[in-house]
Image (cartoon, rainbow, N blue to C red; front, side, top):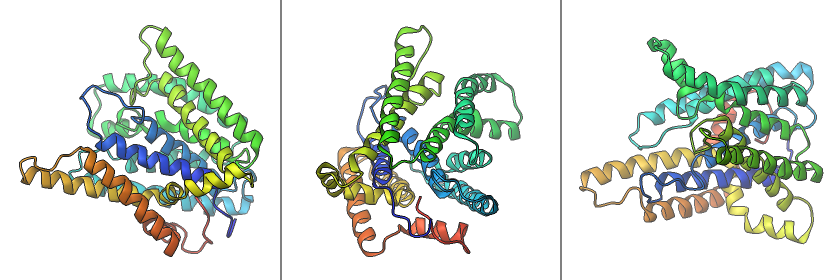
Length: 337
């Protein structure tokens, strides 16, 4: 694990997820317009969380049993840090639904599942994909007390409900346990993800009352958008792997996006701070600064790619990623995520 090279396709996918979030948060649109990036960018981000935790715990060869408690504790600490950072970002008036606190809960839910066999993970993910959306409907109708309401929000009814979204992380974990560098794995991800997407979106098209709209958190969306995420990761892994001419060219062209993906936490946080600043400026100037708007979106994308490329060239690991590693693994060697 120590010094293992990063997987370029994973970084590129994470970079695209971050850029997709920028588009979803800042692009001008009519109120009822759903963009391709809506929901799917954050679902790709969540699926990649499962991939990252799988890599951190040994990828296709899970770490030895005597190291599992320490590594699981490290992931729990990461989850708590993400949760707290999410709460801090919630205090800023960015106008954005923050994912990081929900993300921390997702990490905690995945910890007990990290070393299960792949078939068990697949079966559990399938059950959750069908059961959790129905539990969410029941929770929305329930008259819960304040503590139960907060728990229900984080697990079932919130903007990024952790239990409903757990199948995305499970899918990513299964992929990491299947050897991401293997062309057969990459092909299976593309094919399997495509089938899932067709099933999910197809069900929404032909079955009455079924929806796969962004953030509907229905079973159809879990299959549809989750399938898209798996297929995208598989395609990017294939495109950037090996010594083929196309792979070398893709790695060169996509390097700035991979750099952004290697410090996704830093860029996500910087985005929220930037949007919060623009919200204040817009209010103070009577709307003179357009938010959302194309200038802001272009600035976010170009600025993030430039910052990530320069920082990675000079310093390597992103600033918040470096801090996260130190806080969660003070005595352990660094591992790629």
